[in-house]
Image 1 (cartoon, rainbow, N blue to C red):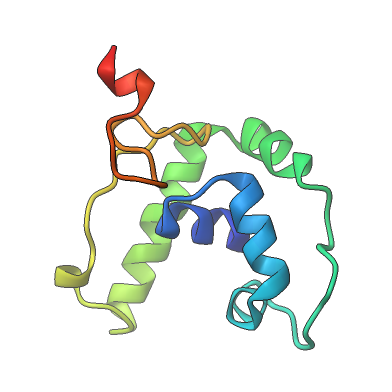
Image 2 (spheres, rainbow, N blue to C red; image 1 turned 90 degrees about the vertical axis):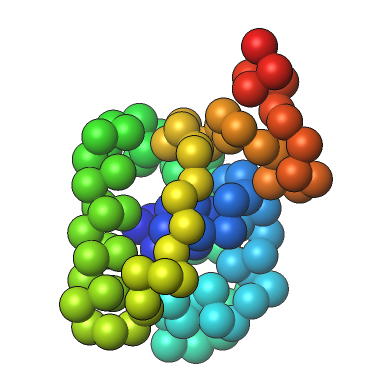
Length: 109
C-alpha cells in the first residue's frame, strides 16, 4: 500500500492510474515488494482511499518526507532531482491536472 502511494505521488497520477500501471509494470511491482510478476492487483483499488483516510494526510506527508530523506542519505537521489509538487493527499491536484498540465478546477477557483 505504501509503495503504491509513493508511486502515485511521484508520478502525479490517480489511484486508478497507479493501479492500472502496477498491473502492467514489473518495475512498479518490484518497487512494491513483489518477487514475481503479477497479472492481478493484490488489493481492491478502493482500499487505497480507505487506507489514506485511516493514516491521514499528516502522517502520509511524514512518510513521504522520510522516504525522500532516506533516499538522500543513501545517495540514491540528489536533492537537485527533487521537485516540489503541490498535491493534497486525498488525491486531488490543487495546482495542475496530471493529465494535461492545465490548471485544475480547484486551482481555478
